[in-house]
Image 1 (tube, rainbow, N blue to C red):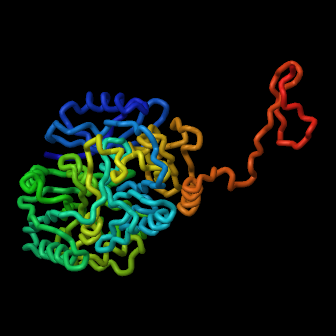
Image 2: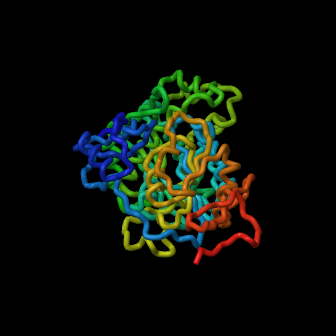
Image 3: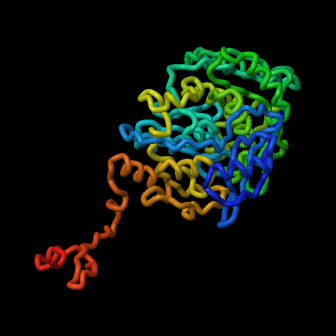
Length: 451
């Protein structure tokens, strides 16, 4: 079983069935795990697909879509998304979008986010009202094909690389991380050593981080054997990247793409698609040499990685109370089940386009796109938004203001100046409608049609 990215040109359409049919024709015996568009024009999506080879063929398509029947406005809930591996200035490193998440969380009842936004090696400071949801499950939530059930805690299966090349030193560190989380978080966890291991490789392309995973059957077998004895999966394995990238990334001042995150998301997408449970991954040091590298003082956004030994605690904390995944559609409209009916808005970096944005477009969910420098080149204004559905903001402070307007029932344009004055209609003697430039209190204005 293998997982890798493939670039493809897809005729432009916002119809999910048409996209699915076209992709299925190109990859008839393979499983599509993720869809992301680098840019689009009037004719094509220029997209990257995460393709699973030799996967079981009984899984539903990622393009499956269920339109919500209504919008439950009793609570104001949002999704906060910062994709992995595209070099976002905020959120492209080690949990450096956490302060932004905390800010936005004050404007809503619940904020659904994914591990990339808060995973900071041995640090995870997500707010209490955040729901930690693996990226593909967040996508399925917006597509209307899964729902969430909040829990007090999960039974976590921690899958740890056997680390044979380093005589198990980093494996022992990971075990200490698990026991530390049990002693401080009250974590319910079991440990499984992955032997033989999978092979994860991280690369940098021209505009994004990419990866390749081989021997997934080893992980599949481990998770299958223990199925029913865990609610969530925390996994730590080595990721092979060029040794020079460790130094280059740490000394880049935050300007370089993170070469590890993309392949990590590939792995958790695989786990989610096959086992339908919350999951997250942490990298393990590849060698003693790399673990002993001295980077000096680094960019603040990279610092959590430099001070960590296992990078694992953020994952354990996130999964501790991650909501469980509900597939039974009969339960979606229950009050205690969180589904697409309960989402009022999503906040994204401007220029990104994948299934979450297309799903929001179809579901009538408000979309707030924030200028957050990244390598994607999609002009989201060209999508067929409904009036008042799409907002572009210069920064997350402004986005917070928009969210507060939406929550308070205040039209955004009414807190800006100049304030547009609505025109007042009258009809002339011929019955033709004419408009004044401004509203007037002139009592001589005839508002009645001629007799």
